[in-house]
Amino acid sequence: MNFALVLFVLLVITGAVSLADRLWFAKSRAAGEREPWWIEYPKSFFPVILVVFTLRSFLIEPFKIPSGSMIPTLIEGDFILVNKFTYGIRIPIINKKVIEINQPMRGDVMVFRYPMDPSLDYIKRVVGIPGDKIVYSNKRLFINGVEAPRTAMPDYLHRQRISYSRQFREKTGDVDHAILIDEDKPSAIDTDMVPQFPFRGNCIYNNDGVSCTVPPGHYFMMGDNRDNSADSRFWGFVPDQNIVGRAFFIWFNFDELKRFGGFR
Image (cartoon, rainbow, N blue to C red; front, side, top):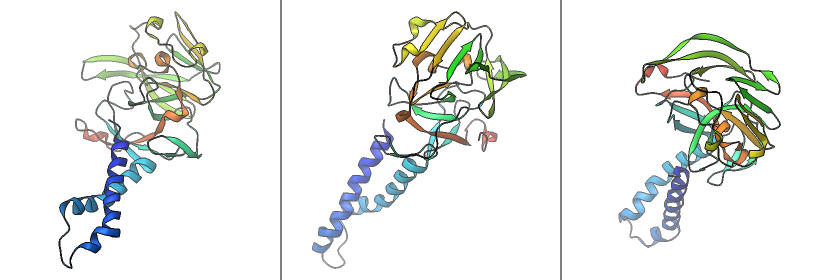
């Protein structure tokens, strides 16, 4: 469901009723006569919907983490906040940028509309910006020929499946963050599972992994849970018009209350 579109429709309906009442209906009611419910309710809800629509469209939008692809940075069930204006002001619904502010940077955790189905929102980390050559080979990340620095950390325990993954600190751009690696999973990507996404010719797949050159106006995204993330390695690049915003704050998790305030 496109919640922004639903809010917009409700805003238009309640706003139209409020305006019609001010211009016509109120003048025809007798002094002291109560407003009919079909006028009273829309007028009451209009300011609330207006505030919610404005906040959600231009400032901050809540988002729930639906999967484990960003473990350990974000876990399934985290409720986070997404900054909607850091990458520019966009027209709601059509998501067209009208005011340029900042560009996504390597290392940002970004929410975007899934290129294969724009009705779905995805969240991954920005690994490559326009013009970058991204190589992910034998579970090591290279950006423009330089390997992303990483250091070993204690293994990560997955509580839901009671198993461990190798954990590292990796630096992507200026951001130092944790990643997970499952060494028992192959480095090669099954190209039979890779669709013909736009700019598919910019990527080369081999037994060690994948090499891609990021086209103009697009971004290469990867999950921090490297061997359990369907990301740009599999479905291609994220165009600028699909960007929703930058994730920056965990405000709730029903299962782990201590996660409040985490992330950045």
